[in-house]
Amino acid sequence: MQDVDQRGGLTLSGHPVCQRAWRLLLGVGKSRFTRLRNAIVQGRADPPGDGRYGVKRHTTLIPSDGARAAVHEYLTKLYHSTAEPLPEGRQAEDAVEITNRARRVKRRGKRPRHFVKREERSSGFAPTVKFLPPGTIGLYWDMCKADNPDLRISRKVFTRVWEENFRDHLVIRPKSQHKACSLCIRYKLLLRRLQYQPEAKAEQMRLYRAHLEKQYADRTTYWGSRALSRMGLQSTGERLIVLTLDSVDHAKFAVPRDLSMQSKCFSNFVRPSLRCTGVLIHGYGVVLVLGQPFTRQDSSWTCDIIGYCLNLLSQLPPDQCNLPASSIILQGDNSSKELKNNSVMRLLSGAVACRRVQKAQLRTLQAGHSHEDLDQFFSSLCDRISSSSSLHTPTDFVDNLQSWLATVRPLEPMKKVVLLDQVRSWKDHLHCLMHSNTLKGVGGPGAPHLYSFERAADTGQELKLKPALISRPTPKLIICICCERIA
Image (cartoon, rainbow, N blue to C red):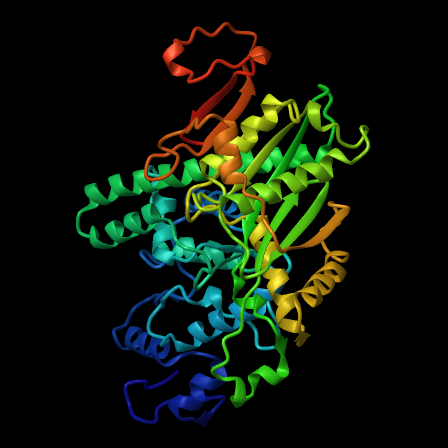
């Protein structure tokens, strides 16, 4: 390189070249060439170092192995505790909703939106994916930081771990088909409004996490009881039977159901709807009960269904189910209309007193956290009804659902679909039979979520009760234990 301070003074192998050609031939950038030229003009002995290969200060990422491990552990905990699989029927609908939401977002800056994008060629979600309750990335990030107060977890590290390791495992649902928990909504609103008050926000986050841990403990107890019910007779000689009861939205069960009803001629035609209640007897069977619109649908309806299920269990061989020596657990929503009322509790206590069952429990999860496997079963059931275009009578509904039940729930061999057109007056009968004994404080805020009925003679303890506590003395004394939580 000669006469670099002059214009056109660059030569290569004796041929004059321009600056751009010289840089392209040697593979040197413009800024690098300028530094080399300035060093020669200034008479430096050594060329300046190449900044591409040196360690730059403030340009390398700080190692965050501890933070990444904490985020991975937290997301794994969410996958096993909070997230739940989505029924096949709603996967396509939620996939479209999430894709549309991702497309509506303007790509401005580095925002953690990329984890919700799906490839155009993919349909639905991977089989391993589970769905988190509706929320935001910021909410789950704040909860992760609250779980690890000693670590500094940035939003970038949180979203990167989610993208790299949980892309096909965790997805936040855009909306929920169930009613939200009032406490969860309250905590979310408080956390949103306390952005500039870190101490108050940390306290609300602690209370919110404690609330979620309680709900998870209750659901874990239900999962354990469900597993014991499917096992049958245990090694200790005890048998536990879990019955999960709930009703499905009757909008799908409008009669008649036919393509002709989409005509304008029937636009103002009001169709009656059937009532559908399902019972999962874990490890034993599935019972679907359809009711006419004119059938009374109160606590007597629930008692009639429970009595029918207990009658089915009593007809099984003793080696499969010995009902008088078994304990039953009735699990359902926190609703006083169907399950959590005095009529159902009188029925359970009467079954224990008459030795139809050994022990009975009524368990209800908190409102907003009670959606379980029965709701997923109902989602598939509604998809079956939606795909059926010709159902003219209630009997057609029964036949259609009976053929569909044969293809689902392989762990429950007994499948029954019943049309109930008349309900016994269980409410009045049990009220008279139990001498008007009533449990107060069953519903409302602060009401217990666990009621256990057991014979006093089986407890082995002597009870000293005042005569005023019993309206009429009876040898069949039943103890009712109430707990605020299931766990």
